[in-house]
Length: 171
Ligand SMILES: CC(C)(COP(=O)(O)OP(=O)(O)OC[C@H]1O[C@@H](n2cnc3c(N)ncnc32)[C@H](O)[C@@H]1OP(=O)(O)O)[C@@H](O)C(=O)NCCC(=O)NCCS
Image (cartoon, rainbow, N blue to C red; front, top):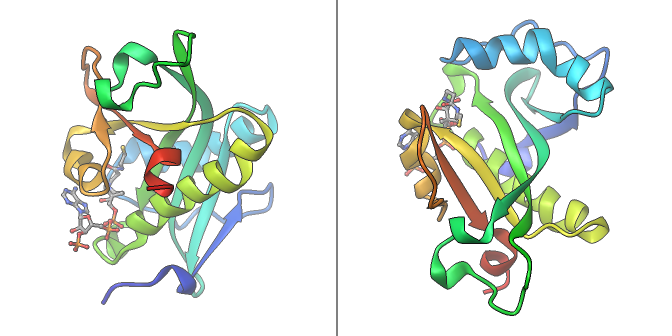
């Protein structure tokens, strides 16, 4: 059964957060949380948010500042009055759901929370219009489902995606 956003608890990672139990299907994402996330946070390189369902740590996502070249977004997403070469952005640097809780709506709700943070917090203090992610190939359809578009840029192992969250939330 799907878990609604009201049943999830989101909190900022802290020095005493218990993260040892987290296991998603991607080892790099497991080791980032266990070995690096606290240091990144202390050093102001990233902010990581934990997602709990009851007493279980079911997911996490990590945000960093970003920008995206105006040429990398679709023509219809361009703001022609804006005479700069890059749009200010925020990036989902990591996002993962614990394997045993996959397909229960946790990922979708973490995307929603990321957009809420961008819209209601970050963009209230500093210019920020676009949310970006470098998607793993297996996760592409997950993002596409929620209106993310492929950035016009060479792909590597990951696929660069973006979403104009301000436009989408104000339609
Ligand atoms: C990709 C990932 C975050 C999805 O999390 P999740 O909690 O299972 O996602 P949700 O349950 O919220 O899924 C929302 C919708 O997307 C669909 N979906 C989820 N993962 C998908 C995938 N890999 N491909 C296609 N559709 C997917 C679900 O079926 C669901 O659709 P529905 O509401 O019609 O049933 C999770 O599988 C994961 O952590 N994978 C390993 C790490 C990873 O790839 N992270 C992304 C890094 S860019």
